[in-house]
Image (cartoon, rainbow, N blue to C red):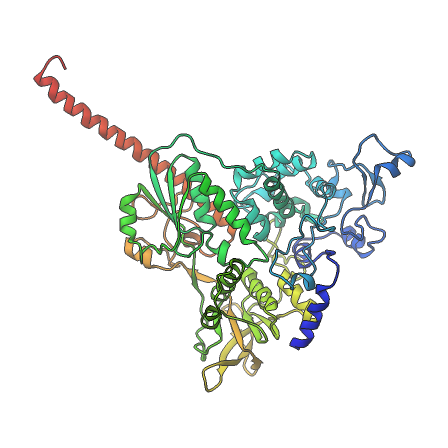
Length: 604
C-alpha cells in the first residue's frame, strides 16, 4: 500500500502545476443552499459561464470590437448565466454570475510539499482580478447584511463595503476598511471556516459570495503593494500592560492597546510568538512566514515580545502583576479532552496538539538547519508507514489527517461519534445559522485522491486500545453508537477491531490550564474557564482581564480576535480611569501640602 501511495505521489510530482477546484470549494459549496439553476449550470461546464480554467468565460476587447459590441472599456466582457457576454454589472450580479471559489492546489500535487494549499500568484488558475471583480459583484447590497452580524462574522467585518470597493478597483481603500474591524485578515482569510458565508443572504437562494477568498486577496495584495506599514504611536499614556499568551487573542489585545498609546509587553511560554497560529495550525494552512511578518510589524510598532516565559512557572505571575498597570490573560484553552478507555497508556496514542506541534517544530528546524537527528529519535511523532486513526473531526482532525498524509502513512481513518451530517440544511438548522451539512475538507480530499475513499467513519466510539507485550499500540476496538435523547448509546454486539500503529486524539479542548488562575485566585466558571463577563472581560481580581478561548472556551481564530479587541477596550477604560485617579490623587496631595505652607506664610 505504501509503495502504491509513493507511485501515485511520484506521478504527481511530474505533473504540470495546473490547479483545479478542490475540497475547500466543495466543502463551502455543500455547506450552503444551492439553487437548481446553479446545479444545472455546473452540470454542463461547456455551456455554463465557468470555463475550463476555473474562471468566468470572457471575451477580450479586440474580439468584442470586431463583433461591434466593444464599449470603449478595456475590461473584457464576461459570460453570464443566460449565455450572453456583457460588461461586469453589480446591480444583478448575484443573478448573473455563479459562485466560483478560488481552488486549492491539486491534492496529489500539494501532498508533495508542506506549502500552502492556496495557489500562488504565478499559478495560471489563481483567480484573476477580473474574476475577483465578478465574485465581488455577486454581493447583493442586501438591506440587512447578516454576514457581518453575530450569526456571521464575529468581528463584524464591513463585508459589503469592501466587496463594493473591490468591484470598483479601490484595493487601497478596501484594506483600510478591512483593518477597521480585523487586525489579522491574512490569518482569518486562510484558516477561518467563514461563518460569514453561511449567513450570506445570497445563500438563501444560491451559493453565497466568496467572502473568504476576497478577504485574503485584499490583504495579500496590500502586503505585496506595500500598503501595510508600521503605524508608529506618537503619544504614549505612560501606562503599561502585560499580555500573557501570543495567540490571536493576545496579539489582537496587544495591537489594540499599543495603538491606544499604552506600553505593551507580550509573554509567550513557547520559543516562538504566535501561539496556535505558529504551532497549532499546520504550515499548509498557514505559512509561518505569514505569522512572522505580522509579528515583526507589531514589534516595529512598539510591542515587546518575550518568549520562553511560562508565567506561573518560570516567571512569578504576582511579580508580573506588580510591575504592570494591568494584566491581560489570553492563554487559550489548552487542556485536551482525553479518552479514558482501557489501553490508553500504550505507546502510539497522542493528543492532536502534541502531534501537530512537534511536526511544525521539526519543519521549522529543518528549514533553519538546526534539526539534530537525536531530536527526531527522542521527540518526533511520525505517521510514516503506519496505520493511522484520528479520533474526532473538525478542523484539527482534518489537520491531523493532512499531516499524516504528508508523512506518507500506510492508511488513515477518521472516527466521528455523531452520524453523517445531511447534504442540505435540516429543519432545525435554518439560515443564517452555520450550516451543519456534509462537506469535504482538504484532508478528506487528499485521502480520496490517494486511497480512493473518504477516511471518515461515522457513529462509532472507541471501546479499548490493543497493544503488544512491549506496550506498543497495535489496534483498537470500536462500537457503533446511536444517538438518543440521553446522548450516544453503544450498540451491543457491534464491536469491530481496527489495526492502528498511531492514534491521534482530536476531540477538542475542555479548559485552560489552571496554574495561573490558581496562583492569582481567579474565579472560574462551571467549565473551569476564567470567569469574566462577556463584553467587560474583567476578572474577579482588579486590573486583571481575560479573553479568548481561556474565557469563552474552545472557539475560532476570528472569535479570539474579537475577544482580544474587547479585552483591549475594557483594559483601556480601566487604565484611563486609573490614570485619572492617580492624577487626581496627586493633585489633592499637592494641594494639601501647599495649604499647609500657606498657613505658615501668607505669601505662598
